[in-house]
Every structure is written in structure tokens, then in C-alpha cells.
Image 1 (tube, rainbow, N blue to C red):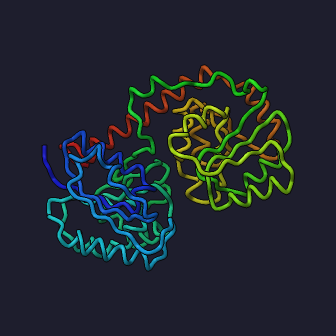
Image 2 (cartoon, rainbow, N blue to C red; image 1 turned 90 degrees about the vertical axis):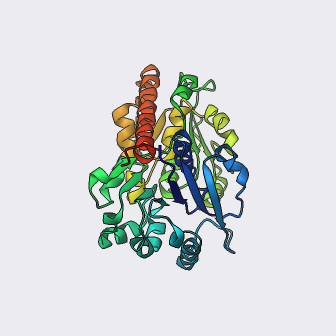
Image 3 (cartoon, rainbow, N blue to C red; image 1 turned 180 degrees about the vertical axis):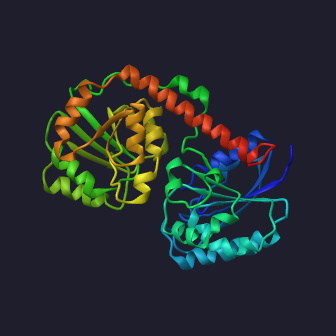
Length: 367
């Protein structure tokens, strides 16, 4: 087994939990990695890497003045200079480079083209306009492998399909599926359907329609756990309209996730599919909902809706103007026993894909 050093460059570790898929892979295969971390929120702690102390060979932490998630182009440029100064010009010809996010790859692209390295991997978890520029530059031709969180991303990444492998946003192991506590009913003990959004709040216009359709109907309880750019607008709206069956809790800690899923009966993955990321992504919430035994509800027109429909993982609404009627009809015909079987099979397939990812990235026969 080789001990080549892998250079991993996440744009932010705290916002990129999937990096741990790579750390787990390196740990399982006795490989070494180097990390360059852009600490955007100024909250990095090396404690998070303690389980991987035999894996992480070296850590470089970059911190800029602006404590925020969103960054301007000039800040990406400064980060590029830091990466090049600290790492890239010193990289060994046998090293392998893994770059997280297409926008970071675009900023590093010209430098990477001049480098002599064993392999180059790009990890794509989101759509960004930089993808279109990379398509125009035919930059994917320089890449040995593109890791995506959704197989549907091949719709906007213009490259040989065989270069793409899937690594799902799901970090659980096969044996952990045995402990899933599946719900037995969509209507709870209070005779309510509880539709919950657990994660960053987005798509205000779409959720606005849903809220208006179900407002103050005592058969429904709508819950939003998490923050987002439109959270304040959501809270003001339900207050101004005196909507009594919609509740917003805001920020929550990671350890609270199991109990939050315990309070809902349908997981909200309604998405505005007019954007590429919403149309083609398979969000974390898909996997989390199934792992916590909760059926999903969404509108049609997106990849996640197709997955939910084809695998019978929840309820897909075809006409939002007829929301109540569709919910009531589909809930009455939904088979929770079948849901349990289908959820387990879907998560097993995701784990199998992740095992294949590990083999191709860290196995003796590289991708």
C-alpha cells in the first residue's frame, strides 16, 4: 500500500462535512493527507481532527479579516496566493491534489496546469457559475476524476461521463442502518400532519405559497428549524398575518437533529427548480430524513422529486394550487411498511456508492 500524501484544499472545513468522507477513506487505507483550511467563520478547532491524528500529516489554516460565509473574488485571490505560497509550488510529483468546489478550482486553474502531480481530483457539491467558465475553458480535461454529490450534476458538467463518480452527502456506515427508528404514521398523536424543514431555510416564494395554503388549518403544523437569508422575512410574515400553525425555531446544534426529526411526520424538501442547483442536487435533507425514519414531501420538477417518486420515499405534489387535496389523498394511500423497506434499500445503495468512491480514490488501483 502506497503512502502518497494527498493535498486536500477545502474552501471551508466547517461548511464542508463531506471532507470527512476523504479522511475516513484515508484512515481505512492507511494513507496520509495534508489539509489547507479556509477558516471563514474563525471557528476552527483542531479537536475536530483528533480522530484522524494518524491520517493528517499537516494542517495549514488561512484566516482573512472578514468573518463571513460569503466571499468576494478578491478574497478568493488572496486565498489562492496563500495556497500557492504554502503548498502548491512545493508539491511533489507523486502527490495527488483534491480541490473542493469549482470556484476554487477556477482560481487555482492556471497554477495547477503548470504543476507536475500524480492525479487531480475536483469535488463538486453545488452549482456555481464558475462551472460554466470551466466548461468553456475545457478545464475538466485537466482533471483525472470529478467527485459529485449527485449523479444528476453530469447535466451541467461538460466532460466525459466516465470521469464522474458519486460520493453522497451521507456519512453513516452500513451497520448504523439497523438502529433507524422509522415512523409508523404520518398523522401524529394530535391528529396533525407535521411538515418540518430541518436545515438552512431557502426558497421563500415557494414556502410562502405552502404556508398560505395551509395557514391556520389545525390539521397541519408547519415547522422551520434552521436559519437562512430569508428567515427574518418568514418570521415577520407569520407574525403580521397572525398565522398560528407555523413555527420558526432558528439556529440549532448538530446534536439536536435526532430530536428535531422526532417531532415531525413529513420532511420538507420543497424546491424552486428554476435554479440548476435546486433542479439537480440531492440535498443532505434527503439522507437525514430517511436516516431518522421520516418520509419526505416536495413538489415535482427536480431530481430529488424524481428520486422520492421512483423509490417511494415520500409524497410528491404535482399541483401546488391543489396542495391540501393532494396531501390528504397521498397520505391516505402511503404505505409506511413499504417506506421502511425502500428507505433502507436507498441508504444501502448510497453507502455502496460511497464504498466504491473510497476504493477508486484510495484503493491500490486509482481511478
